[in-house]
Length: 312
Ligand SMILES: NC(=O)c1ccc[n+]([C@@H]2O[C@H](COP(=O)([O-])OP(=O)(O)OC[C@H]3O[C@@H](n4cnc5c(N)ncnc54)[C@H](O)[C@@H]3O)[C@@H](O)[C@H]2O)c1
Picture 1 (cartoon, helix red, strand yellow):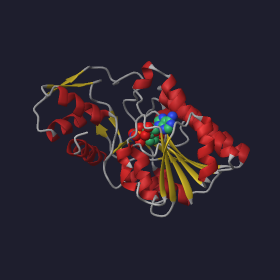
Picture 2 (picture 1 turned 180 degrees about the horizontal axis):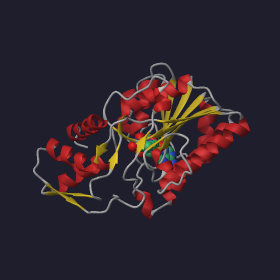
Picture 3 (picture 1 turned 90 degrees about the vertical axis):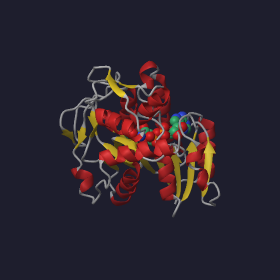
């Protein structure tokens, strides 16, 4: 198959490139706004790998990419992944999280490409109580990022119905591991590199969420897309355990061999749009035979070690 991975130079996209390169012709497309060439450089010598630096909001460029690529399937991961940033500038999510999806769907329609795998997010659910399954509603995202993901899901399902496409929508939780580019672990390490006497933690540290290891996620994406065949296939992907932000702070301080004080800013949320607590009901994906192998705490620690060892 000829596959296109949008956001292919990003954290998760680059792991998907590594996996799919074994038996597909892979094109990775990225504007490098958040991704890094170094994530995929090790694939450049392969005949069945191609990297295109392009912005998905450049329609004529995308049209050319599709005309040449003759894609059978699209893995759509390009998005703004910095949720906190779009509080100040919502247009970031409108353009990079929503419009990238819409432009992609137009291209797929125009070039008769039928299959899309979409990286959605737990952020579409908003503030919730208890383990949530895929049918939870009404959906009331509280971040612009969550709103852009939910709107993207809506257009994907309408394109599926109108143009006989097929979609796999996977709602990721927080994902961590090697090549991570952003998020709470990154922020803590960077703060401590600047001042290791004290670590400021946004919120009260009680934020409690599942952190999924990236290689477990890639296996879930492949399994769901290969074993389900509804016109629209929607799955929560996650890990049953969770990690508190106050524990992440302790893990980071210990891994950096410091004695820093932890200072909490005190609210229940880290920033406007932050969902402080959530957990998934994973029975739908578990029934397919998938379960995360790495616990949330282990995944966080792998991520910390990777950032420190690679001096990112
Ligand atoms: N990492 C997580 O915790 C997490 C959680 C839920 C959902 N997701 C979703 O998974 C996908 C991958 O996330 P990630 O963590 O690898 O983030 P990432 O930032 O590393 O990857 C996203 C990539 O998209 C690229 N991109 C952004 N706008 C673009 C545009 N207009 N044109 C072309 N490329 C563009 C960026 O340069 C980046 O390389 C995203 O859709 C994200 O929303 C991630």
